[in-house]
Image 1: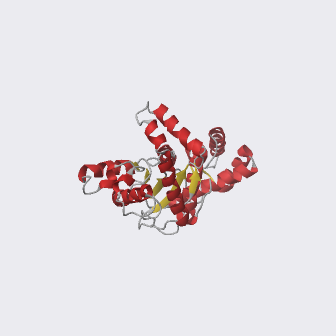
Image 2: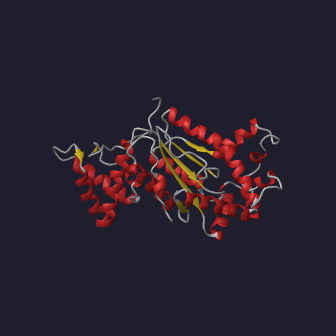
Image 3: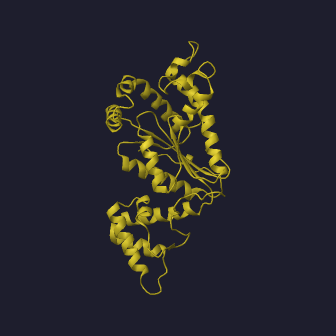
Length: 312
């Protein structure tokens, strides 16, 4: 093994939570505890561990403190998620989180934050994989990868039946997913955990059962048209107009048709679909999907995410 799964392993054992400093706020935040409550809980556990003869905080202690700080229902939920985090930490294989979603869905922002909270130091984008492939394959040999995902319909011939926008997009995805799968297998070989995000992370086109890894897949969407439109304006302001908002707004209909196609495939493949109406809520939902997968996974390489559906 060249590296561990996390830069900073979450400080949990299978039965107890050993720590001289209690449960760090980061782990509690991953468990869905608001920042203020996370600090208060962590401080209470730290004080409890300072008592003579207290070397670790057991589940009952954590549950009691969580209920006192957060209330009975929220405390039980937080304690349960902490147990799930312990199960995730106990899985001795890389974690690969696949986050798909169309242009403007906010998947890249979500992916970076999910990776940070899980302690994963590697985030890969299928856009970069596509750009790399463009340097090796000419437009004459592989035309669809030389277009934006929502413009790839221009690369397909008139003989294509159905929506050419979707047909071109799927053709591009099939090419890019060859490189994406190679990145996943490389992560397993090197024992890396990683988050792989991108419009090309389409359910059914990438393997979700790989020996030696826990693979968890979700799709992020923006169901409301106006919210989707607003996302491009926000991104334009945040990037100083680098990505040209008009281009995306002019092709919003094509982008939305691709989103519909990806969502349909996700539901068919039993992949969770999360409506990204609130960044924090979306992150917590994805973290819950990961924790649920870890709890259900009993053998390396088993993908448990496919059994869960999140309606947002």
